[in-house]
Length: 78
Image (cartoon, rainbow, N blue to C red; front, side, top):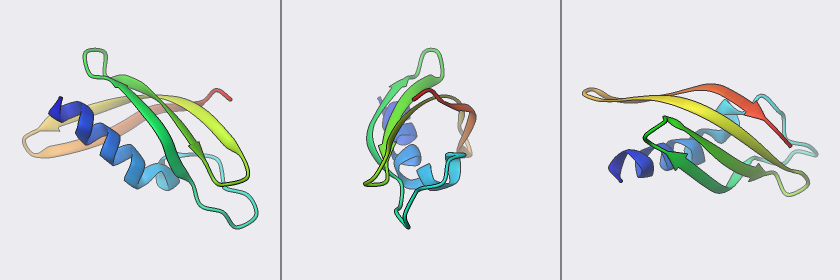
């Protein structure tokens, strides 16, 4: 559970850096929902900027000591 919550928090705080898409009309990305599957180290995120909404899948690497998160294979699917 701790890993899942940490990944969700990381995605929410860093979506603007992680996403390869740029927000439109001066908006900022914010996360609507994140679904994390710790057993397979992947997940799905829905995020928007107030004008457009998009969905992406991602894989991640997580280490506990020292605690770090790395998002890999971030792909927009919608």
